[in-house]
Length: 299
Image 1 (cartoon, helix red, strand yellow):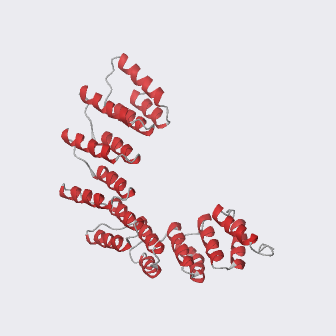
Image 2: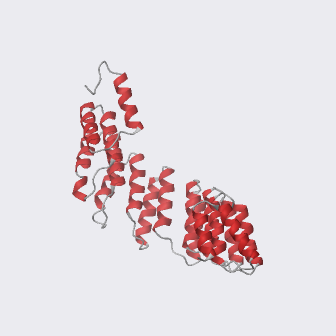
Image 3: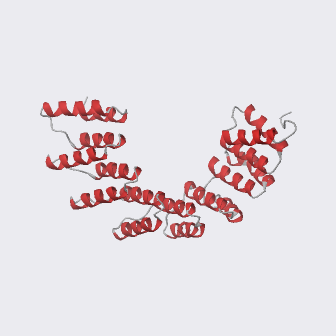
């Protein structure tokens, strides 16, 4: 079995020490490690939080005239971004550009997503402008990251504009894109706009998934529309999407928040009968209700 394959397996199983021992053995035998071998180790080091060591390994590749590729660099850039060290990620991109390796869509998306998650939306938008100037068009992941960031910042108007821009540019939103903006609209109290987008899904060739339904059921319930939420809950099967534990819990909590203890209890019994369990939030609402009542609602 080739050394690279074994090293890759060890790294993916978190056995970095064993992988490095084998790497050292390879050198002793005067077997020159190739790009794949180094990339596996960079991946293993990054997964273990050893970004500095991974960077040193990249330098070793350069010193040993082993060609670096975009895949290797993207591993390190992703690791920096996951740790929130965006400045290091940007420096890595600068280094790779100096070596004649151009960032690709994965590189930019990784950085855009990291900036968005840190609330640095302006910087993320600037990065998108940069990638477009360099001939790389944003994809569904890029736009969805921006939509999510605007929603988290309670800027649903901007999120909707990004969705519209996405469509105008010929980039078709997927169900994740719609779930993200529908969730943002519900949280901001724009339930009517959320309902409008939800009903347009079929027109756009998409089917709502369990997460879409959970978002809408929760949003409707918070607006006091538990009857409409329940109707939507019961209609899930029409789209070949059966309620899961999350959906049941969201609907039960909707009933409880709207003081409909009877239907909440009935749905709890139905949920348990289907093999699902109440989560900690649902249990807490029931307990608080029982403690605040003269008699158990479960009798």
